[in-house]
Amino acid sequence: MSAQLHITPRVTIPDFLVGEVQSKLAYVDESIVRAHVASTGDRITLDLREQAEDPKRSELEEKVQRVVTSMVQGAFKPKVQILENYLDRPVPSSADPNPELLARGEMFQEAAGIFTVGPLVTRLISFFERQFIALADSFGAAPYRFPTLIPAKSLERVGYFRAFPHSLSFVTHLREDLDAIDNFAQHAACDEHGLNTPVDSFAKIQALLSPAVCYHLYFALADKPLPGGKLAATAVGNCFRYESVNLASLERLWNFTMREVIFVGPKDFVLQNRETGRERMRGFFEEIGLAYRVESANDPFFIGEFKKQAAFQSAFQLKFEIRAALPFKQSTLAVGSYNYHQDFFGRSLNITLPDGSPAHTGCIAFGLERMAFAFLSQYGLDAANWPDAARKFVA
Ligand code: ATP
Ligand code: ZN
Ligand code: MG
Image (cartoon, rainbow, N blue to C red; front, top):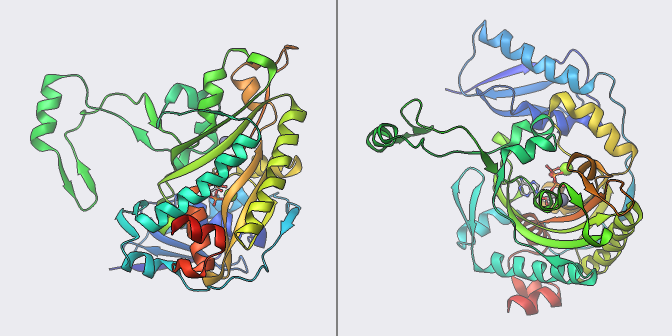
């Protein structure tokens, strides 16, 4: 039996934090299956797996109050800077693409956040990829292939555990122990919640699933002078972010793919290329008739780090998101971002420029599934209605 819990937050959640708080509530307690914050910010509704009685109920409420207070108290409304606004570009579709994607076998859910896509979506993604690679080529970016696993040690060096602990995905293996392996082989079995295993089966965690692409380049460049003093690179890779009950169709996946164009070098080199990249993409988005806008944003830091880090990113204009319109839900979805990390990775990983100072880094990142999803939300699944370039590519 499911149940609801209504909470009045001790501090009202300002409108610019409603979405941010709502997405973090998913991580407050395992009993929460959905969290909703009223747009007025004065009411929180939690859908629970089962009816909660005291003391569980008050514990839950206390945890929620803690999250709200930590994220809201002393937070400043960021000045949202809009660099491009083409949200009113006319598009032919306002239908939810999900039912048709499922019906046509173009999308298949293996489990929450784990999806297979079919030939039409795959071809559409190749079409976008061709464009992203052309963008990379326009900078003479060197191609790389990065692993899907990322060492725990490396993530620790760049402070990832403190900033984004909630979305980490861990990798382990059985201990190299005959008894442990035999025991696992005989007893491992799934129930509806997951895999049950004998205690003490697993080795200590050495690796995780990679949450981003560009980190791997910085690790490869760590602890030495940057050859030539500047570098443009590109790669596509699997990325993993555990987004709990927020996982939803192709919009928010546990396992998704990202194409990045990455810049490492002096500050001006990185900032100028980020800007040039944005200008070049503007032309492409016009060609495919995408309704979107580009606006300042912040990374999804976890509760304790959120206020400070988000304010910092916003003050220094470190992140701009390409937010495409989703007409069927009158909202927008980040399909990519233009990022500048200052010398954070250069300092943390000791990547040095010829003058001995730490290198600056930045990246242009595109979420491939989201790109396709946003496009299909605006143009539908019938390629006859698509802009020329896309239609010809999939024909
Ligand atoms: P959001 O604000 O929607 O959570 P983000 O700000 O965390 O996204 P970035 O870290 O900038 O996203 O990642 C670059 C791109 O990767 C995003 O613009 C998006 O297209 C894609 N992306 C990020 N998280 C996911 C996800 N869980 N599922 C699918 N695509 C994602
Ligand atoms: Zn990046
Ligand atoms: Mg974001």
